[in-house]
Image 1 (tube, rainbow, N blue to C red):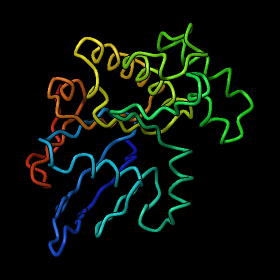
Image 2 (image 1 turned 180 degrees about the horizontal axis):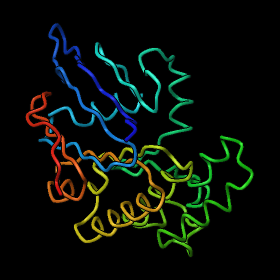
Image 3 (image 1 turned 90 degrees about the vertical axis):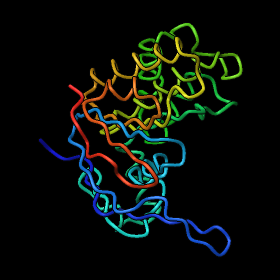
Length: 228
């Protein structure tokens, strides 16, 4: 199996006044291509910080991250942005849709930025797959929370990412709606063969992935284990 993400001895600290707070301490793990993987832990355990580092949204103080065969440490901010556009999909808790764009435009924009000529066609196909074939021209304010997150899921797959990071994807949804969104996420993931990394405090959701990494106080308290 090919490793798509290799994390070694990761450290991250933040300054708070005159104090330095270590958010992540000596984090090491691997994720195989095509694997489903979850990072769990209580609030403040460093889950979202770890996801941001793995996705190249921020830089660690020490340690190394190899993503899609590229060492993130050696890249400039612009080079990391290019890597993200080509290889990574994101689903966030707060949807992060552009309010002035329609559902279709929100999904198609990442493709258009890459110069794809079939952006609208792909966007329509993805929205149909997530059950929003009748919502192409609706703006986010005209959609429910569950519908907005479905648009976000469709957008995340628009650039056929090698790896998709989902940060508390059901955090702003009720239980029933959240379950439907997660079913869509896993179904699309299986169909596309994308590696899926989910940050969550929901153990029931985490147990749907092949392996779980548990964090507490910025440290791994249990090595990744099979859930099967």
